[in-house]
Figure 1 (spheres, rainbow, N blue to C red):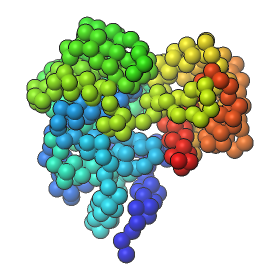
Figure 2: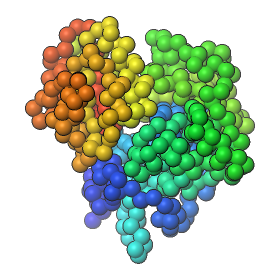
Figure 3: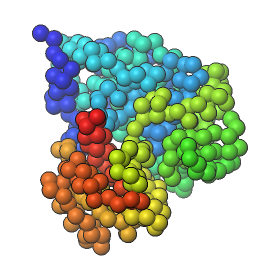
Figure 4: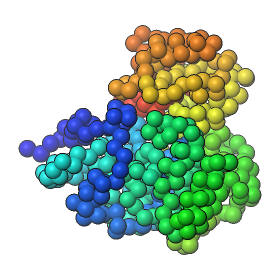
Length: 439
């Protein structure tokens, strides 16, 4: 009997090593397994042009915005991102539509009937090839491919794209990628290919030199978006953020948050190159893509406003989870806490170094600590103790689950209060899954 979708997911999530749940033990550096899988499925990644997006922070927002612009320009656009928040199929989309459950079942079933000998792919290696085959079947005009982890040895790095993009570098996954920004940059720079243009979002000092050296050695034209005029020319407005004096005129991006001007500069630098490959990209497509990225691509979890039934209470969530992300989040949340009551529902995974994150936390907020519901989730009590050692007091609620804590915080919230949920992608995923089940 053919397996169901839930049975197929059970195989993908439990029988294959999965970084999202297990952490470093599931990370399989090297491209040999991915090449073998790709060949077994007919090397689908060679049948359509690609854009490769890496970096520590902002690569998800950047990939989704580029995909939205290409869609708005009329191109059939594939988008491969990770991790998912509610449904596995969020990872693989064409023009915003998720891969069907039937295709996930079919691909996984065909894989399970193949004989790969000693080759044991990870979850990410297999789903990368699933995405490539889906895009080939759907005859996409182009696919935007987000790097999973690192770059040089990431499964997605079997592609030769039209353009490589590296958003920025921050300390994250240091046990796997290196304990300095320069070492991490060296791994991320591995997606720079011979004679393929590369756009770098932000880079200074040693990091900038790493990228320049790699690009020069590969004869790859390099653009630093942070060098472009008007890099920080952005104004918050009711619809999001307004960017004036861009090469495409005035643009309003629906994604808000202090990190978005940097992402926008990266996207605009990329568009200046991509329009030579995709001539239908024009000012209208750029404006529409920026203004409607969530509707067009299904993006969630980037300074995302959550509808709240309690009048006068604002709720936001964000998947930022490393020092680079919290540098921006901390500033925005501190601004909020200076003018109104702020409650932070915060949780992390065990392998996250909190020492470099806590410094960015607003000191005059109310903290409620939670445990994300993955194997790697740090116990709420453990997070509470670590924060207390830095002079930040907080509480845990009951089991420390996101849903239970969220219900309690909203019950207690006062008019004019802001509630923030985050610290980990998995905390945001728990919240969104809970809210989707209540509908």
